[in-house]
Image (tube, rainbow, N blue to C red):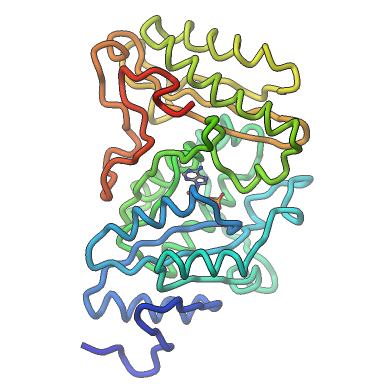
Length: 329
Ligand code: AMP
């Protein structure tokens, strides 16, 4: 089987770079046409071990071409946020993708995706889009969903991989795919952490040495919360707050315990603890699964968002009954 005539060039086992949506659409259509599966890993670049884990998971799928997109999406940054300053390291990123054996990267410019006059029709993330991160960052999830919908439409992947690090994003993308009858299967990947528990993030590059030490307290607080899970929701929140209170340099934006779908937390069963805070001038977010009540002692289904993880369990997925330190916090 060969590609239709006039399909842009695609060389197997090499990193093929495309900038224009029309090119990448034709190539991905041709790959689907010859029976290959496609897995998309959307990123904003400045690739780190968290991104690499998403890519490695995607590469485990049989007969699958992994496509990575790198696009710092202005639509999901609010006024006064770090769009201009956001770390960009294209050469290093391309090297990383080559090392990982990625065969396709989509690198659009802003104008390639939004045209010269900018986008006017955007997606409404619904009520959850105004809570937690959405309350702190108005418009963020509309901008995020709009670009993800565009990327899914342009590449039409069978799978798309997202990190649990941005848990609300993962929940909303799954919701969008369901509500809009999109055909891509969304796969959640557990958060990759530094040895001291700090969740990897491109924004960690902003942390001063001193802030970096304080930043680890976010994951410690999550671990304390998990530890208190058997005693219920209030105990979880108290434990997390107690840890954070020991770090006056941390300015809390929210500490919330929710259900795995980010609705209200159950009394007993699987919940999610989410934290957003500023450490120095850097805004960080983190979250963890928390089994509550009997689920904390009896062992419940921990990984609700990653439950249709097509690529298997993650090395650092928290499991019921482990202590915070065993979970890598
Ligand atoms: P970003 O480039 O920050 O937009 O992230 C691209 C994708 O990588 C998103 O799905 C993130 O949730 C995911 N990601 C970022 N950091 C991590 C991490 N530490 N562990 C796992 N996934 C991550």
